[in-house]
Amino acid sequence: ADRRKTLMWRFLLLGLVFTASLGAKETADSRGKTKYLMYAVNRGEGFNAVREMVMRVSRLTQLLSAHGSWKLVLSPFYNPHWRDVQDVPWSNFFDLAALRSQVDVIELHTLLQERGGSLSIDHILHLRTDISATYNAAPALADCVFDTYPGNSYSQDSSGVWHGHFFGQGDRITARKLTCYTMLGDVSSIVPVILSQPDEIIMIARAEVLLHEDFGGKTFWTLRESQVFSPALRTIARDFRREHLPDRYLGVHLRRNDFLISRPDIVLPMQTTITQLAQLAAAHNITHVFVSTDAREDDEEFQLIYSAPFVVVRFPTGSIASSETFQGYNTMQPGHLDLHSGATAIVDQLLCVTATLFVGMVDSTFSSRIREEREFIGQPRNTTDLLLCSSSSPDSTGSHSAHDGETYTPCRAELHWLPPGPALVFSDRV
Image (cartoon, rainbow, N blue to C red; front, side, top):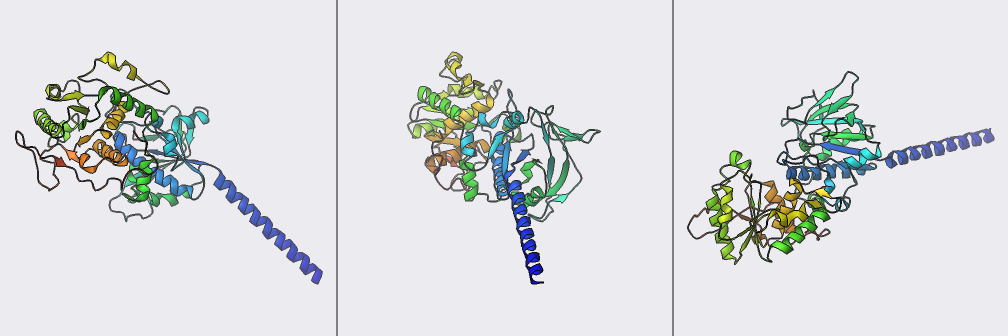
């Protein structure tokens, strides 16, 4: 009897060991298999809003990676303000090595190549904000409601396959399943939903619904710091600066195109703009003003700036150079990519970042990103927070300082959300 009892315990122990080892193997296999997180945002969002939103899905990928191997699939950029190009890969704009210091990423076109040119998304989680929901409560299943903005909707064919714009790749990308949720919360609230799915490729549609988990905190700024512009664009900006700008110059962002209609209180008359810039430049013994603007060619009022009492410099065309001078800027190295309007906007930002003084716009994410980059490279804040004075531009005392023809006191932006100091890791940003 004792021998039978001993044999029984041995078999029981062997079974427990086998079960434990099998469970460990399954856990290791599940953690070792890479899953992919895709995202799509409202096609009406601009470039700088999208790059900020990608910080949120980067944080989401970090949270998921605590439970296994996850890669963030970088969607190409779309911008309704660009007139000559759309759906541009991330590597056209940003240094992927810097991004990978914080989260494992792969570009969509690379994933497509790895999958033989076509892709079937396992599951789309389509989000919609519910302002009445409890913050960070579990997302609630909901009926699917798609808006009518081009590229934002999805449709299901008779075989159950989902189709959509998919970043201009609708003929190569489809989805097997789509589920809609309403929610109100940060990126952590969707983690349990994603982890409950067995799927390999999951896409968050309308990912802008997800809010920051740590807005303005250490994680937020670490992710923001990793968004370093591409080496090609930094080289172009350095070459242009060396050849066409003095050591000391003023950079100004003049947003006009859509703001002329949507924010007329912010867009000053050009003569007032010229007067304020001239006074500011003279006060600092500056002769050259680099102008970053979205003004259209048929914006006749904007043309007044070329009669200003300072040297106006623009990229890639401007008052100091003929078009022939800039033939070398028609391509980006490496890759020989066209220097489209999106890339030109980045060069504009870089040239404003290195300016002695920067004058920005109220309520403009473009200006805000420039201020952040200036802080990252250690530019003094009193050279970064300048604004053109309008009825919507409070100065540092909270009053307004629009003084045409009088002694000019510059208005200043409120810099509540600038980085805590110069970049710690990626200091070579320009």
